Image (cartoon, rainbow, N blue to C red):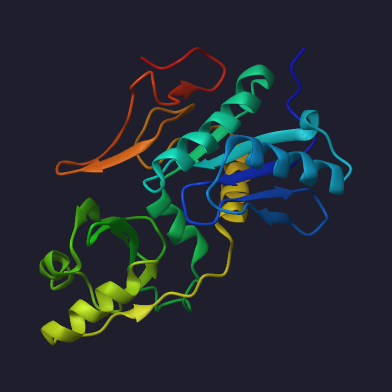
Length: 253
């Protein structure tokens, strides 16, 4: 019979430059470790085995899994999803998938109450482009849909975003530089207070407490699919070649 674990939460983030895994157990500090890039499947799995050994736990103790769905490293995202699938499917565990952009909102520091300005999440997309999306400070309202653009093209959107904007992510300096050259008001920088893997584990715990699991910001409950961002915005990739799967069921079609 499949186990639903004993309260151990697993977070997997392999979408960025430095892949990481976090294990959260009740009444103890998070266990967190990073892989040497580039990420490889066996390296991420070895890191999980090391973590379980260090905290004297087993795979059967895991209650829920949180995993980054991208965008980011094409290979890294799929390795992380494959590891999550290998745990979720046989043990029928809840899975929470979160886009790499939404994940930044969960990682950054929270401003003082009453001063919750919007957050612009950014990621380097290569070739002079960035992935971006923006949310209200509490994350309740999406103010800018997912898009891939240059920092200069983003200026049109920045002019209409509310005041108090803060920028998070590894393309923040490119955005600030474009604002400076254009003479626009300079956004502030959001400070990161949580490692992405820790934030994913916490999100998985929140979803477990609520009795549901979700993917990204708009996908079918119970699924975790790689996120692509193209000219028409973000959407999950359902190609069978990519690790597209549904918790507790067969591959998504």
